[in-house]
Image 1: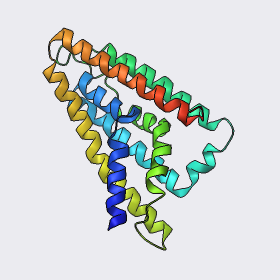
Image 2: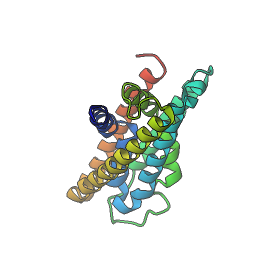
Image 3: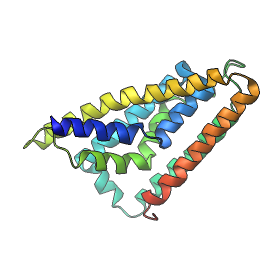
Image 4: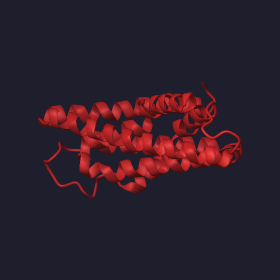
Length: 202
């Protein structure tokens, strides 16, 4: 029970804290609304679970030791977040126009989660010290993956809702613009913090 409690606390702290993925979810909610942002959030959840499965199975470790793979993943994530930050900063206020063609989609969230440097490091750091099923690595991994699924399936929609709620509070066009820009800048700060550590520069 102590292992389970410790893993839940660590998981919520890691995946609920501001980082490239959850900030992008909140920013999407602020720029495009809760309902429109759900597919993107679902992509983030799915991609994070795929990364977790890769980390727990050891596949991620094998891939990341191949020369050149880790920097490429980090650079791809950074470039996409730059693009997403631009899209969010330039999005018009909620309700002013129809933007279904511009809203980040499921595949965009999936791609960001798969390339998110924080996910690979965070999942390993959170899961390694805890054991839920002793003497059975397979079921231990399945239990940890199931618990992560529950945690992020709750956390990401909460961030999406928070972003959308803020947009409603700042509904005036000028305030909405500044809110979008603030989220965009937060995304840039998050990736600037994540990149050096991910490629071994910090």
